[in-house]
Length: 347
Image (cartoon, rainbow, N blue to C red; front, side):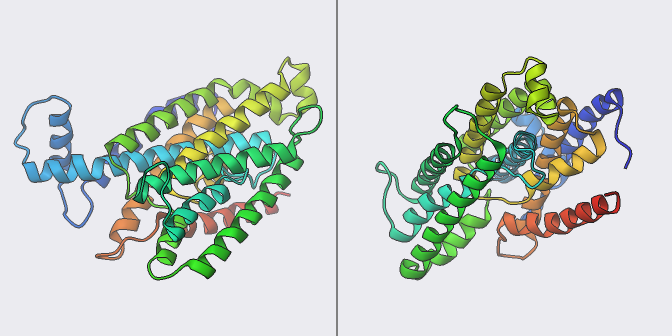
């Protein structure tokens, strides 16, 4: 596949942004109640101060109050996961790295499953709020444990040791959650655990959607600002050091930053697989390895993918919602297998 030239690639970014905007607009009209695209645009324009435009209260409630936070949340989660995946694949120099590499999803599952199965409250919160807070705390705890296990006496974070520490912590967390579900998972608890672990954006409301969207935007901007450092690190630590990159500081900062962003995403949407793994590979095949173009395009592609995955999840089976992680796995696994076979032909 021919990679894009830098000038052509920069021109692709506005096109990808237009595709995302159109995808979100179409997604707002799809659901148990169909809303024509013209009415969707009228609702959005009215909310942005363009006048009444003949919008009904029913359409306003469906499009703006119910669907817009969900679609915005899906786009933000997809963008952040794809961007974090691309950063981690460079930092640990492992093509199989994804945002959950540092045991984030496992730690979040420990917190969330503990609340779901045992019914405990967190700082006075109950229900989905308690699950989200517990998931975030669990993710941070797992991150701290991975960094403790992987950090050498000199303070360095060797990529291989970091990956192995993440695998070990993730397996320990998986054993705990499995045991808890088997022993105490009665009635509706097991189904709720399964739904949470496969991911969903159904719980997004305006407050949570704006928080996640803001974090995703900052994450993409900061990662893109560090594109030069990532390009240097991709050449090896020695080369990066000779180019003036503080390898230890950059690796620590980006690893912890991507882990914190991922912890927030998991707390709000559960563990949504394959987005952070497959999307960077797909975009890298088009743009080449330069991160200044790879990161924003990966974020936009991830956002488009998750917006449409959510549309499929909530409309494929009438009256029932499929976990969004199932949809991304169905799409991502075959495509990733194709990428592996394609690379094997040229090896």
